[in-house]
Length: 285
Image 1 (cartoon, rainbow, N blue to C red):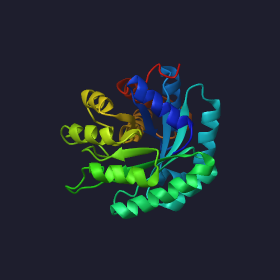
Image 2 (tube, one colour; image 1 turned 180 degrees about the vertical axis):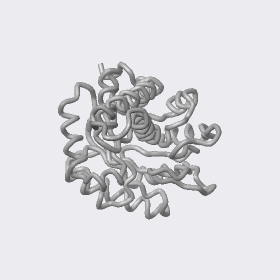
Image 3 (tube, rainbow, N blue to C red; image 1 turned 120 degrees about the vertical axis):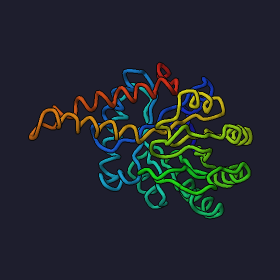
Image 4 (tube, one colour; image 1 turned 30 degrees about the vertical axis):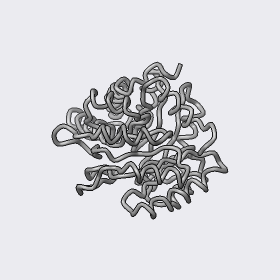
């Protein structure tokens, strides 16, 4: 287990004080900056998450550079995180580039293969005191973060316990009925399974697929042991939809900064709402 890493301290505080640390997926510099501005104003600890496709497309070097600059400038607890990497080598690259936190997502594989990949990343991370997140069960849906459309999505308690005991991983995302992307109808979250897993593990638990989950369900999840909540779809959709609106109203040949500022402000309000839903506002002080 990572020793006294910034993220471990953040998640431990969340567990003690009964809130969750929000992890927001960024896809460009504009939503990246909007997330930071909102978190600073709300005085909330925050995780800046780059999905593996963003890491690959922008380049790990650029993601690491802007993330490191943001963390150094921040007046709140802030961590850059590689999200949903299905490749061990990508996790290793992120660690080498200075990412303080990575996720190895081998949940689509067999339990033994999942354990093997998680263990390899965990072993590699320890020298640099990098926090590692794994996943057990499936996160439903088909968003850009990946997903699963079968019925066997629910994390098994015995599997979760075995993966953690054999790998020493720092945190665990659990499949309890949440989904990537927007929900069709009300999410059906298995809080009983969440509590069962939380009872046998002593590491932070993570909820993926936050966009669209009702506030009361978020509160129940936090009570059940969730210390970190991932929010992605609503962030990039808010940004792009507002940019489209600005262009439709103002016409062609607009200056980038004039169009993106209103979009950033709208993203900030979404982030602000999620920070308050996670009850992390004011927790940085």
